[in-house]
Image (cartoon, rainbow, N blue to C red; front, side, top):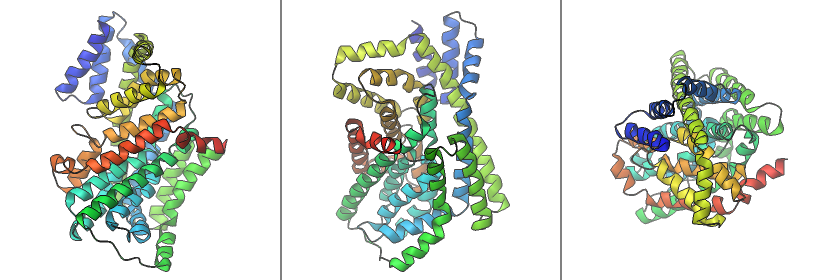
Length: 426
């Protein structure tokens, strides 16, 4: 009965449009009252959920990303990507994907990627004869590349949700090859769609121009090397690297490029504070919800259910992926990481799946959920930027969904894609 109270309250509040953080918090509070436990337990769990030192990295990474978005970094990265891949079929679509790889290594946020890259690329694509739905679809699905490569703050949330036992450096490293594989698969899908619709290519500007654009964008690109190199080498922790990233982003945009004005700086601070507050509130409430799941022995029950269905790891991983894909259609990513990690990580571990490998599967799977209706946050951002309805985008987004799902299956069943690079750095 306790689980009916927990999940029933949560589902009811979610159905009537209550923000997900309050759904989690109120459901936890109602269940604690039903169990006749002290109500203060909920607040203790919420407080302990956000009182984790590693979470300090999240606000600083978010702030660094906001500074980069507002400091003209995105335009310079798009210029480099345009010179490098614009001559391929459907050139601006390929530029969009390459820009997501470069910018994702700076922002670590799919929504920021869709907003920044989409805001610059979609109007250009419209002007040059591309259909708006194509521009929105490429922008939306390619933005989840940012979740896979450093400095993805969702990797940090996963590590904490797993009890802090999983190395953030290993997770950062593990996501690189899957992220690049996702970019490649989306490029193939974009090429086929562009070929079918007879979209144009862009002229290659020459190696000298590409070199100049690359040098112009180098200060921004160096941030990727600073974050990954510092964390991976052990020079500083993920939390320390986030502070360095924020200071470096401020120096580049204020002193290096001289593109950051006082108004943009204030806007970046406000946006970072607002995003951080939302993320931490969700994490805190989800921590209380997750504690109740553990208290009610849901993970152990889930292992028994999975083992009763099949003892084949291939089947179990497919079931987990299907469940996560369904959950991702109506819940945001951060609370799902906190809720589902304590449930499915023990199941995956029981079937011999490495925790780092499972983390990459989880992040990619839930990233796809950000692009799917009815609650796909990144899908909404892309449609708002492109000024089209969600239905217009979803009607033609299927080739890109297919590319992302194919990548998910490869990452799920070829562990070396996630584990080879971390092993190389040990």
